[in-house]
Structures are given as structure tokens and as C-alpha cells.
Length: 430
Ligand SMILES: Cc1ncc(COP(=O)(O)O)c(C=O)c1O
Image (tube, rainbow, N blue to C red):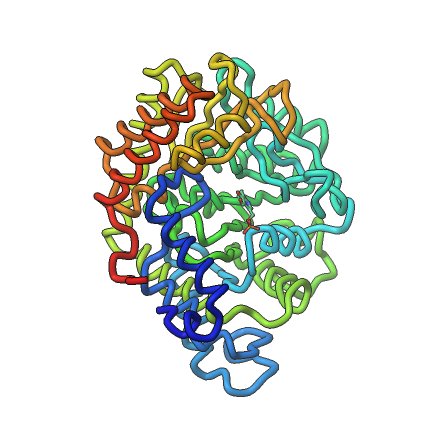
């Protein structure tokens, strides 16, 4: 697959080769990562990268797009089917761009958005002061309840009635419970707000019908394509065709909601779409429509439950005391270890994860109190419950002996052995 690079650019080849070795030999527990299929890899690495295709299928600014239109239309149709959506735009380069484009379509600068607080599990694009979202829009936030670690919908309603946002945002990067879009919509209706869901983390569960469907409750849904959805790095925006609040907010616009979203993506925010990635999205969506994908997501969920139970058995405190989805958020305070210490130690032991703030954290984002763990990537390579029990035991060993280098070395060997049982890209010989 990468034979040419070996000949023309040995330095880049070496790094790509080593990265595959790293992925093969370590346990990937970053909740936002996954391993795409060889078919998705091939589409993303194809000559479609050569093509300029500004515009949309059958309405391009460049010639020669007859085959590009085929792949983009396939991606659109499959995305609509996966999410029961009336309209899909498959061009956003990444999740952050998708959110920027959705805000740009619906709002004026400085309009008010109510989203999940970053330190309770929201994403940078949900209002961080150092992100475009916090600079261009007026964010206000809801969080989780201190006792339960769950979003309290009465509290969301109270804040919405007080703040009167023009858009309510449901979605998270680090929250382990399902969302009730019906409840969010009731609140949105009370204050004449748009309801947008950023389902980046749990798109796979929606596609597999293992989470409440966001439509018809939401106006707009954004998602990355590379997390539980197991596609190439990128994003999509899905929406209803009609602008439900047109008479209130967009009286003078000639566009419906779908038209507003498309214009915000191009020419509003992006130039030429990444058609090689869009083809890879089409392939991944095709895979997600198959029954095997449902089985995969069921296993992701089973594995996450086992990971949560095992860790709690070892005395770890989980935010919300468990999980409904693919991730667990571990509060390490009772273990006397910080998130950064845990991330570094686990990395040395061949277990990859990320440090993470926990709700009501007394520490800062560079060395917070928690770590976030997820099962999508390990499940793709075939890890089942018994393997996850071994991973949980390894995590416990490392964190309970945080300063012991010999234990890290031993665990690294054990993890490498476990990974060998579930080979990654066995067809690739380097
Ligand atoms: C909820 C959510 N939205 C948006 C994004 C941004 O996606 P990207 O990294 O592709 O810009 C992420 C990424 O982690 C996310 O978790």
C-alpha cells in the first residue's frame, strides 16, 4: 500500500511504518479514535485527491466531475439513510468546521448558544474562550449534577428560560450517558431556539439504532465521521429541509434550512471539498449500513460496560458511576494520581488514553483529575469482554504502582501479547 513512499521518501516511510507498529502493539483506548477498514483506507488514499470540485453534485464550478458526483451522491444518500435525515452535506473537513458552518448558517455573530460546559464534558467548539466559538458567539452553559454526574434536564430548562438562547446544543466529548433529544426539543420549543446536536462521539450508536434518533427532534445534527462511525477523518452536517423558525429569525431569507447549511459550507467556509475523503465516507457509510456494523456497536457497548464494571471493582471512581455508551470517565482523585501522571504511565505500559477534566475538577486542563477511556478501537480489532478484563487489570496494575517502572515494562509486554491475538491490518506487510 505504501511501497512507493519507501522508494521516494524513506524518512516519511519510516515514520508511517513505525506508527503502524505502534497501533498494532498498543491498546488504543482513546474514546475518539478507531481503525478504518482497508477499503476506507484505499478510498482515502486514492487519486480522487487530485480533483477540484467546488460546489455540489451536478452544480460544480469545475469540469470533469462526473465520477466525483457519483461518490459524493452515494455518501449523501447513505448518510441520510443512516441518520434518517432529510438532507446531508458531506463536505465538512472536520468536526470543528462542521460546527462552525452550522452556527454560521443559523446565527448572527454574538448570538446566544446554550451548550454543555467544557469542563463537564462539552467540546472546544461548544464555547471555549480560546476557540472561534467562544469568540464569535455568546455562549452560556449547562453541566452535570454534582451528585449523579448526569445532565439534569430541569436545570437545562431553567437556564434556557433565563438566558433565552437562539440555539441549544446537545452533545459532548466526555460524557458517558445517553441524551434525550425529545426533552431537549421541548425546552427549545419553549424559548424558540434551534436545537442542534453534535453527535460526534455517539454517531455509531445512532447509525446502529442503539441511541435515540436525533431526527425529527433536532433541526441540525453535526458529526465527525472518524469516531464510533469508523470512517475517515472528517465530518458531515445533517438537517431538516425546512427552517422551522424562519418567520422568527430568517424572514428575509430565500433559502430553506438545507440551502442555508449548504451555503454556509460552500462558499461560506470552505473551498474545494476533499473528494478522496468523501469517497471514503461513502465507503464507511456503506459499511455502517450493514448488519455487521450493528453487531460491532453492540460489542463496543458490552466492552464499555465490562470496562466500567471491572474498574469500579478495582476501586476506581467513575463519573456517573458507569456508562451507557462507548466511554468511561475515571476520576482518579481517590487513587492519589493525576490525569497527566496516569496518561504518561499508561502510555509507557502500552495503553493509550487521554487525561481529562472531570466535572467540578479542582485541577486544571493540563493536569486534570481524570482520564477518559473508550472501547471503539479495541472492539474493531476484535477485543471481547475477556480481553477487556485483562486491559482493566493492566490499568489497575499501572495506576496502583504509578512509580514502578518494572511493572510498566511487564504490562507493556502483556499488552503486546494481547494485541497480537487481534492483529491489525494483517494484510499489510512492512
Ligand atoms: C463532540 C465533538 N465535536 C466536535 C469535535 C471536533 O472534531 P475535529 O477534531 O474533527 O475537528 C470533536 C472532536 O473530538 C468532538 O468530540
